[in-house]
Picture 1: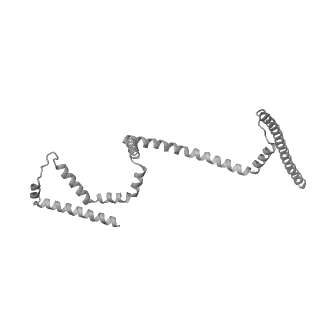
Picture 2: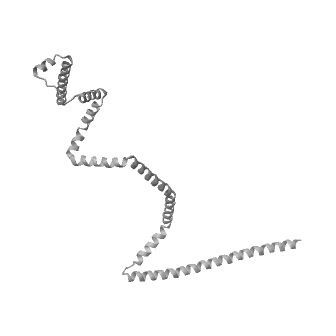
Picture 3: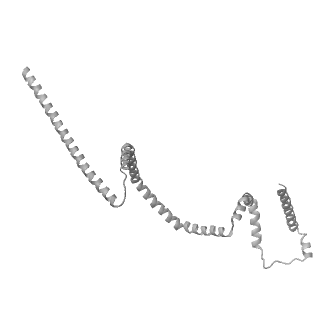
Length: 227
């Protein structure tokens, strides 16, 4: 019984030794293959180097061997940085592939929106607006624009006051009255007739309004000069 156990152990050891020998042989074959590959690559590299040197010499290009050696050393020292650079390039390419459909769709949407704007007339309106701006530039100088900038606050204040409801009503009333007048059939007034017309309440009220209006304008102008 002990002999059988011993023989079994010996057989196990032999099997393990066989596996170890097989692994050693396999590693030897791999190493030999690698050495052969290195040798072949070295020969190819030498041939390429010789061919490159010959081509450069034929082209009249001088190569500094020391500079090439330093370049190779720098490449080897920065191999990790080069790997990161290539990794970034691959990530960039993947990003471009991912966003290409989005960019394509945005382009299609942009073309659709531009077509809709053109159909609605926005494009033509913009072209005509550019002509308006060209006319403004042609008819106004830089000094005019500078003067506008200096007085823009006063202009905006005037526009603000003109757009008040009571001012708009007054302007509208004036326009309505003017439109109702027949300018081709205006009666003539002599001095005597004008004096008689002064007795009319509405004319006296209108005259009073004009005098008050002119008086207040004079006072406002005087106030602005003193300020």
